Image 1 (tube, rainbow, N blue to C red):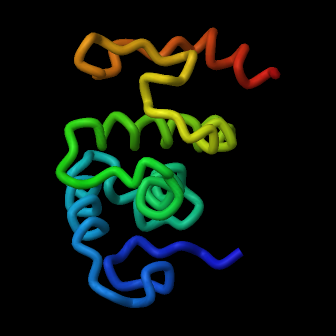
Image 2: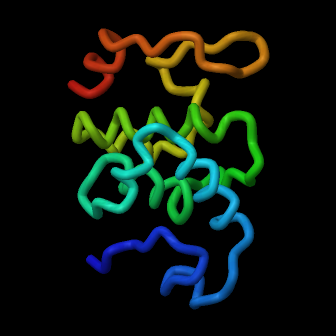
Length: 119
């Protein structure tokens, strides 16, 4: 597998400027764990690549749910359970995620997540 790159100019967008990638990277680089984005095998790097290039929601930036979705992806990559992300669900549609009426995550049920991963 070719390593995905976290840059607006990369082989995954044919080396063209991509405003969406640039804006999302600006948001992610502002997070406390931003230094881990540059480590190719870190959960943060894998989650960022997933958000940018794989996630079927193609989340635009700015987006009020971007950080929540990224954190969920980091959690799943940390637990070595990234295949759960391939279900193409919105963050609140996962069985182990509770959200408020506005769609913001209020709780991640680790017990439900563990059960989900067993099947």
